[in-house]
View 1 (cartoon, rainbow, N blue to C red):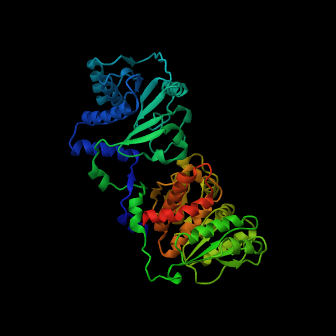
View 2 (tube, helix red, strand yellow):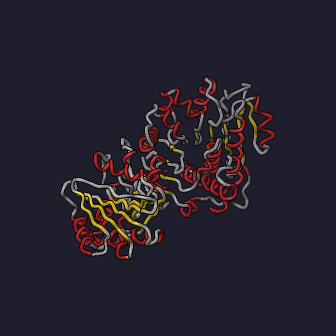
View 3 (cartoon, helix red, strand yellow):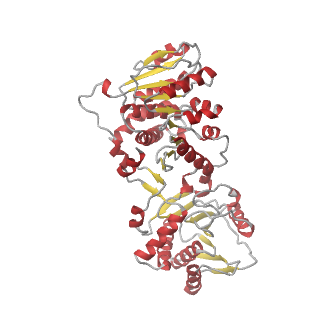
Length: 515
């Protein structure tokens, strides 16, 4: 199922560090272009971007490392100096060895005659005064870094971060690794105001705990090989709305509600009826023909009044879900929002899931129940959809989450182990496929960090599954539409005032955009 999906969609790829290096090498050998000339091309793009944002009155201090990132920085320094910027360069050559292209650009920088000052640091470093009128160009270390910064370079990074100067990092903030930053020393990563990255965003850019270091991200096109990008498979991708339009199923003019799918929502213990209301309304707003919602006795009147379009099934228990819903009329089931974690609910949930012959979405308390009954995970049917937020994922994985890199890899492992679709929620929600591949979402905003937002997502995905979309399609469309509804709501209402029911209100506009 997920294999065919990648043939249908051409999704923006995210390359890992070895692939980025291979892309550079392929461009150099197949354009063909000398590596020093590709470096010049990159430096011109960075210098132009800086010139667009900072005037020639800005004092520029360039910190260049001994590798190719340092070579980029030295070329940027020379180009900016030629544009009448006052540029001071510090080249850190503490081990007495520069990369070939870095050394060439060091000679070009010293020979150009435009620089205010050029200082090669081999042992002792007298740090410059950095104030609010200074722009630091960070070219210490690029994507080749594979361990945390220590010693003098760590001290330099901390000095940069403590200053009031603005910081522009080339390709990636120094100290950050492009893929996983598990075990990295966060205080030893440059806190950039803007990151000028080449070709595409790096995997680390999609993880929440790296955001304080990236600032604004500008992706610069430096003419890297499109042929390599097209033919190289990537485990990480970003879905684009133009591609999602191809997945939408047209609604026949002669459709009736019986043809549009019947969804079952199991949600809302006593006191949590709102979760059931949000999930059910979102389900109805996502194109499904009928929705049945199972609620405890105490929530019956609330549901009938709040969502008159829904069919309400009453549990025999007064306060929580305890009855397995029988019948073959359902096309998809969503379980968990506000359901509670009583033992009756836990037993009924697993019985419901085991009996299911249709796609199932597990969220919220359904996931928390699985965390408390670890052996039940292996009893889940293949292709089940799980939509954890970071805390729920950590509990599912035995509390192993330490940072967002580790958390993402835990979600990938869980999806592969269970042959499930694990949608790890966040600003860039990550859909982890059974194959081990990951697709990041591109919509959504911080205003959606509000109670009930996940309940809305559960309703949307359940509806799409009931409509006949496969699991990958339903998750991709669901997470995008959910985020896009949030963006539309925030554009009119602001992020501070956004509540989850606003997502449902703006969901029709999100659908209309795709249609």
